[in-house]
Image 1 (tube, rainbow over the protein chains, first blue to last red):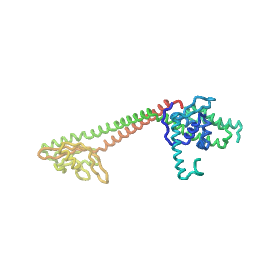
Image 2 (cartoon, chains in turn yellow, blue):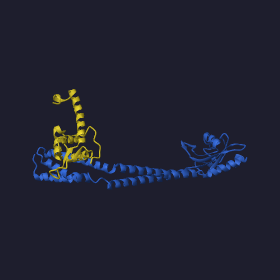
Image 3 (cartoon, one colour):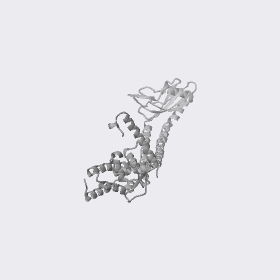
Image 4 (cartoon, rainbow over the protein chains, first blue to last red):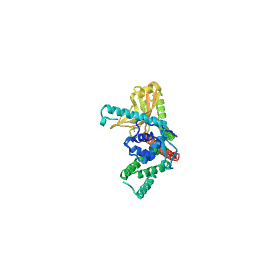
Length: 114
Length: 266
C-alpha cells in the first residue's frame, strides 16, 4: 500500500532509470538493471541492493507496484502505476526542456537530437 | 569472459552471506529476488566478472548504509515516537526547573528571615527617639567576610548615621533608588551587591525599612549570602543531574520502545 508522497523532480538517476525501464512494460529485477545499464536507459551501473531499495521506496510512494505474476518465486515483476507514469512524464519534460536549451546554445555535439 | 559454475556458485554464496548484513525486514522482503538478480548477472555474458564484482561491492556498501539509515528512520523517526519523546523531554525539563526554582526561592526567602525582625526592631527603637548611635548595636562586621547579620541606620537622604557593618573601612549604602522605593512602599527586600574592590562584589540579603517619627530615615539589616549561594549551587547541580538522568531514561526508553515496535516488514 502506498503511504508516501511522490518524489519531486529531479529524480535520482537510479529512480529515473527504473521508471524509464518500467515504462516499456512489466519487468523483473535483473531486466531493469540491464535496461538501466544501457546508454538509452540512463547508463546507470546499478546493483541489486540499489535496485530493490529504490523499488521498495517507489512502491511505498505509489509509483511502482508488483504485478503479482511471476514465472518463479524468486523473480518478481514490477510495473508503473498511473502516478509513476505522471512522475516520469514530468521528469522527461524537465529533461527535454534542458536538452532543448542546450541545443539552442549549440552545446550538443553533432547537432543534438536527431 | 565466461565463468565456471564453481566460481559462480562461490560468488553467489558470498553474496548470500553479504545479504545477511541488510536489516532483517528488508532482507526478508528481497533476499530471494536479490540473489536471483545476482545469479542473472553472473549468467549474463555481456557483463564480465571484472565489471560485476566491483559493481556489486560498491552497491553493497552504498545500499547497506542506505537501508540501515532507512531502518533507523523508520524505527526511531515515527511521528508518534518523536512526539512522545518531545513531550516527555518537556515534562522532564519543567520538573528539573521546578526542582531548582522552588528550593532556590525557599533558600533565598529564608535568607531574609533574621533581617526582617532586626530591621523592624531597629526602626521601632529609632521611632521611639533613641539616638542612632545607641540604637545600633556595637560591633564591626566586615560584610565581605563575615556571615553575621548587621544593621545600619541612615538619615532621610540615605547617609549612614550609625553602622554595625564595614566595607573597605566605611559604612556601605545601597543605591539611592532603593531608598526612593522604600520611601514610597515602606519596605524592600533585595539582593544587594556592593563592590569589594578588584572587580569583585559580595551579595547581601538585605531588608530596608522606612523609619517614621520626628527624625525620618531608613534602616538596613543585611547578611552575607555566601552560604546560601553555596546551597543554591548544590540545588542547581542536583537539579541538573536529575535532568540529565531523566533525559537518559527517556532516550533509552524511547529507543527500546521504538525497537520493539519497529515495522516488521519491508
